[in-house]
Image 1 (cartoon, rainbow, N blue to C red):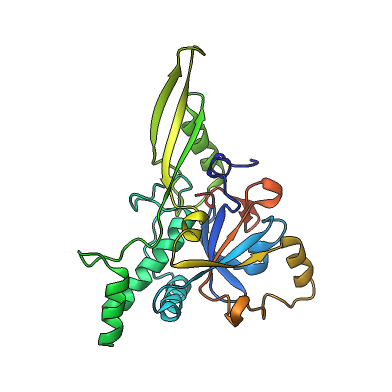
Image 2 (cartoon, rainbow, N blue to C red):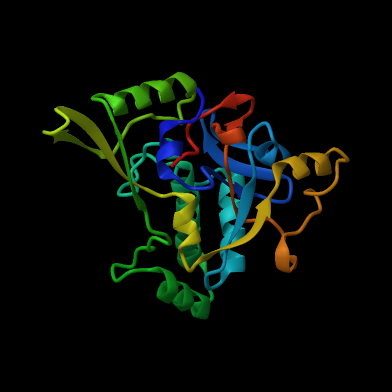
Length: 267
């Protein structure tokens, strides 16, 4: 359907996210629901016009990333419906970025509840929980606004539903609407306002760090020889496992997975 509305209005370099399970596989939420695809497909020129790798660098990062990967591999996470128009203010639905964020929060909560190491327990509690004992948000949402004629959000929802074909997906604008009128122009526009997690939410957090950028065209050539990312390590000698991956749609268009263009990676 071309460039999605949310992709245009967030005005960021990247618009879809997933979690690297290892050097070959990525787990994410898309129009096809929750799925694991190859790293080659995730960053291929057919699906992406470049990408980047973010690493979690908070206290006890290694064991937290290992727990995140375990959750994603086993599918042992809260299966919340995917929605490109999800608000970050609740968990009725999740965008792709919100899904990865929740994986980290759930992994931290699980480690706190199961560890028998008292020193690790107190370290995790001190670093990641609030006064009520709940795991804190690791990133902050952005307020996204977009304007159009009346019914603009209804049109966006309708287009999203045309592409989504899985029970894991629920297309619903969860923000608020305002009608703004200009007496001089004698007209009104509908303003959609949405608090959403985006790739910049991770970039601006002290708990995540941008460690690599991906050139999809070079990546395709690299994988032509069936080598490269299967053995490649990102900077500082660390593996891709447990890293947060982002991409932007090919030539400014939406990303896609499993052969079908989908709307869920824009949030």
